[in-house]
Length: 216
Image (tube, rainbow, N blue to C red):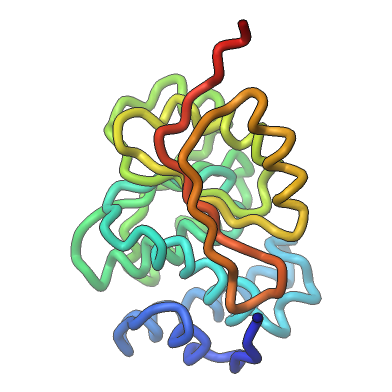
């Protein structure tokens, strides 16, 4: 069941333990988001009222389910949720990197500004996802995405990155059951679901050993 969390940095406490320094970095992030939102449509305006729960704490769930992952790729990063939050958490650890893939140049400029001001461990790629995956050759521990596409489309986008032990970490909502039914005829995987304490019906799904099914 979703909890009533404070709309402040303390909302993170329901998801994972982070230092005061990390909360301060995230506060800088939120301040920049509020500033840039006035001239750019980074998030739905109504969600700014609950930015700490709706965006920051919700995003922190990605790292919480894969705390051992150090090399991440975040697809369709937008305003940085969840990838930039993961990169700020990694800054506390002093290790790891998140590759933020965002083709919109305005949003990419925002990501670069936040990265510079917070010390987030991220690299921003202003490129389409398909072009990025075609040329990216590093090994990956986890691939994240939030509010990007249905599961079958996400798996098609992420497939080139999901070799070896790499896992997919996706935020999903109440339609996940129908998305799963549509994806399973074409895709096989090991699935772990963790329901969100933030929004009823939402969950974080972790998929391992992702592979296309033999069409025959």
